[in-house]
Amino acid sequence: MKHDMPYKLILTENELATQWYNVRADMSKKPAPLLNPATRKPVTLDELSKVFCTELAKQELDDTTAYIDIPGEIIDFYRMYRPSPLVRAYFLEKALDTPAHIYYKFEGNNTSGSHKLNSAIAQAYYAKKQGLQGVTTETGAGQWGTALSMACSYFHLACDVFMVKCSYEQKPFRREVMRTFGASVTPSPSDTTNAGRDILKRFPGTSGSLGCAISEAVESAVTRPGYRYVLGSVLSQVLLHQSIIGIETQLALQKYGVKADIIIGCAGGGSNLGGLISPFIGEQLRGEANYRFIAVEPASCPSLTRGTYAYDFCDTGRVCPLSKMYTLGCGFIPSANHAGGLRYHGMSSTVSELYDQGLIEARSVEQSEVFKAARDFARVEGTLPAPESSHAIKVAIDEAIKCKESGEAKNIVFGLTGTGYFDMMAYQRFNDGTMSDYIPTDAEIAKSLADLPR
Image (cartoon, rainbow, N blue to C red):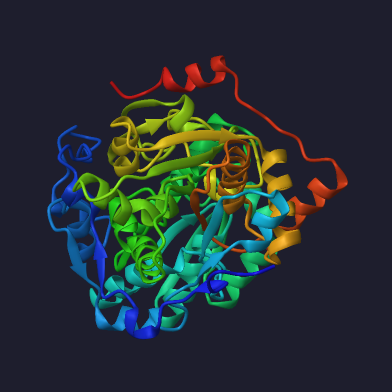
């Protein structure tokens, strides 16, 4: 097969981004502010700094500064694995017999195996700079916990991870990578925190959720001096750090003279999707270009496609600030599907606001169809994708097939957030034909939404 351009669209080291991009600065209608759960008023820097590192709290509240310089120590760390490649999926195109050109930004070329390291190293850096002893966090499928354990090891910080119980049991090797880098890992909900004990009492035998694990991690941080809480998705500071994904994608496409038509990302809390699309959304907001953006979420946890845009707690234990977001209700605990990183009841306030303005489309897809797309992709492209990433692959394939039917040669870009080599139990169930699909009923979602804060 004749290739009309390089297989990998590579940026050189001297093209590594030196600034993060804050898409909120270009939004005429900003995301609604976080609210203090006690006063129901916008959180202040002082209040937020009791939970997060002070510099990260400043980034969280800043919706006017478009570009923020990346500290030199973080850039030095980025050089281990960045810029990451933007790959032309020639073999997938050929298998689909589509006129579309398909590209994927591959974020799995680091030891953590995912994009999460981009924000983990930044948050660990600010914690170290503040003189903290350690940090606490939650993790779903384990990518964030793995990345944070690496970053904390690099800066000699203690790292306590609350891992969603079903993922703790499904992905023991991911857990052991965290422990190898020095982190302590606790299945959540646990009996080690008040929040965990309360959740276990309310939901006996629960397999857990990110909302549960967040409650435990926050409590663990605020009750110990010298600790702060860090988060791998949802928050605006995380989307800021992950904007390096979109910046590099944008630079590579410009370097090779390619204009994206459709940009696709998996959507759980919003970190990968928000990071990938932010610079492109910025272009659109400034009137410089037009794109189609598609957020893809699991049908078992459909916050955008079936949720409500309202203020809700970010965690099940109701100790975190209130965020205006598309939500299924903080008490919603999704089925124990294998895309653990997408099992969150809500969505980033920034992504939610962009979706509410009609700038982003959203689709939900079932688990078995996602793994079929993952298998097909792996067989022709040679990379085993993470279950989360495979949601984007599924819709990228759908869009490429539409191009075949219409004869349009569109440029499709999606985020391959990481590898699936720690997800082999999920692949085994798919290969054995024992994987099931679960879609929550309208009654289940309505019951959870009925408990939204007033």
